[in-house]
Image 1 (cartoon, rainbow over the protein chains, first blue to last red):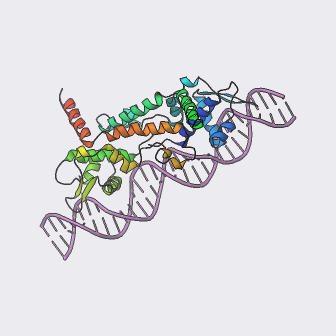
Image 2 (tube, each protein chain N blue to C red):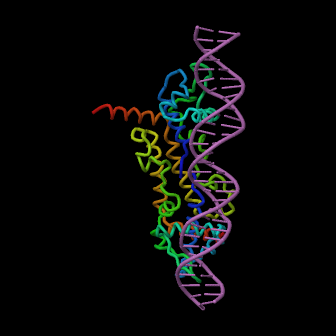
Image 3 (cartoon, rainbow over the protein chains, first blue to last red):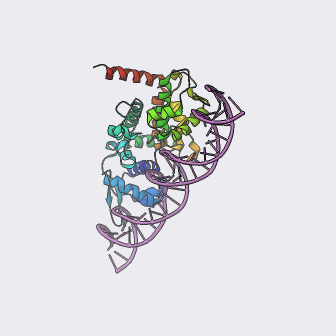
Length: 144
Length: 144
DNA sequence: GGGATTCTTGACATAATTAGTCAGCTTAGT
DNA sequence: ACTAAGCTGACTAATTATGTCAAGAATCCC
């Protein structure tokens, strides 16, 4: 039941990118500095995010990445899908034929249920939701 | 978001054991044959299950394993905890101090939520629940 | 008591995955 | 041209996953 650094870093990076919010692209190096993530590694992660169409890139000086859609339209499930693949905890959830026992396997129902509830969490939350929480958190901590 | 064979096999083995239901112990070899799991590997898994007190063992001829508690009192979360450790998808969920950013990290809230919903699934289901589903499934497939 | 049977323990082995790193390339702005 | 960015694919070290193996200890049956 682990989410690898790929998924975790990608989510942090996407939220960071969303918070920059300018029209001009944000450099990987800036995100990597703020988030304390290796920039070489982050490049690799952004490459995946680009392939699935979650971000757009601009090359050359003053280049970088921008979100391909408004934050409210980017579900966390999309990011996680891109980085970690299916949210199914076991392969047979997505493909019954991968196990000869799957059809009558009662334990499989538990894994199906697990996928369902995690998908609900990730699918019902967008980057925009996280941005709001960041803003709220800043109000809380600055006030006092 | 993967559950390893340890957790999956252990759950199947525990359900199998529950379904044997006799007073006499069930041999690992019999479970491994029915479940098509390597018996050498399964022994190793039962060793863990015994350490956490979910099963009891009897050595010698006619020996084997029995459930340490009635199936209705064995939550799937106990089995999974024994085999996979914490259900937290990220370490910072259980221990804030493992990451210097955890206190103000908004993405962490998602991982906390993920752990919560998966715990609800695994914590609210017992072996007895699965046994009932097995019985129901058998009725369905035999009838007709 | 001897042998067979079953669990017990710890070490070992192999493969896959994770978490990066690196070198060299392409593109674009000045 | 030069430099600053992203792009690509190969490489590596460490860890985890998935077993296997060997030797032992307890127990039962004859």
